[in-house]
Structures are given as structure tokens and as C-alpha cells.
Length: 99
Image 1 (cartoon, rainbow, N blue to C red):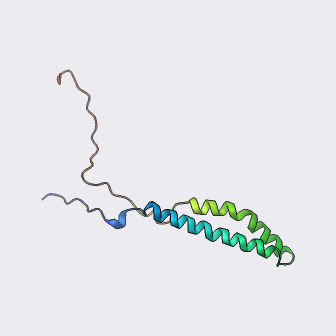
Image 2: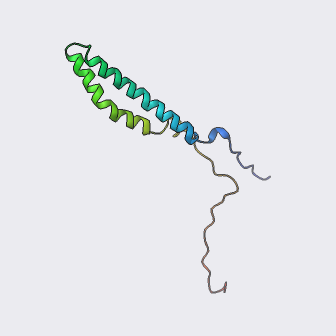
Image 3: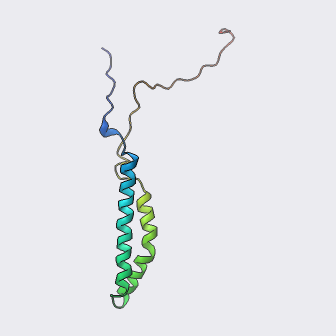
């Protein structure tokens, strides 16, 4: 009985580049909005809370870039299956008998 080839499922494919870009822009925008709030809180908060807001405003750009550029959490869970028509073939070296 011949073995069935596994079907390629649309759910096993990674996100499209447009969807991935939108998700990264959304993450970056949220982080930078929090940074903007930290800047505003510097002028409102008293004492050492003001220092916390300053630290947040200074380090959040780095965090925003790192979070936005990391892959989506789903990317590690998804494995793209090789289509059945593509089969790796090793090159053969001609021998004296072949010529």
C-alpha cells in the first residue's frame, strides 16, 4: 500500500511579511507610547518616582527596538513542510565506466 504524502496546510505557513510588519509596528508604537507617558510623568511625580519615570523614558527606546525586532511567538511553533515535489538529489560523479 503506497504511503500518503502529508498535505500542506495553510495553518502551517508563517505569517505574511505584511502581517509580521504590522505586528512589529504595533509593538513598537505601544512601547513608545509608554515612553511618552513616562516623559509626562517626570513633571507630575514626586521624589524617587520621578527617577523611575526618567529611567523608563531613557531605556524604553532600546526595549522598543528589541521587542519589535524579535520574531513572533508563533514563529517558533510553526514548521513549514517541504512540498512533496521537491526532493533533494545528490550529484553523481561520473566514473570511468560511465564514459
